[in-house]
Image (cartoon, rainbow, N blue to C red; front, side):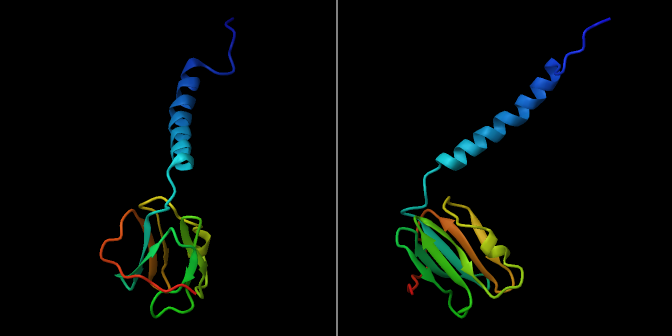
Length: 126
């Protein structure tokens, strides 16, 4: 009778094939540079409304959407209040890595972190 091991070599290989990429992704996300020096592009109704400097903390409201508030804190941007019913935009948290985005669908407002200013306008802080 052969002795049965708890883990076979094949099981360990599968575990490593899943764990190593997950660990690499986690390490990249936690060590990636912050958004300081970048911008957040705010879109309303599909068009670019404003660019927010991630180096300046403040609370902003997109044009024509006074019930939506977007905050910049420590080089990250995120929705902090909205009159939408599900609040998914707020639960998206704060974004800091270029390419990350959050959307408030009922208000048709989107925020996307970019590395440069582009052709966007500036907003006023409250």
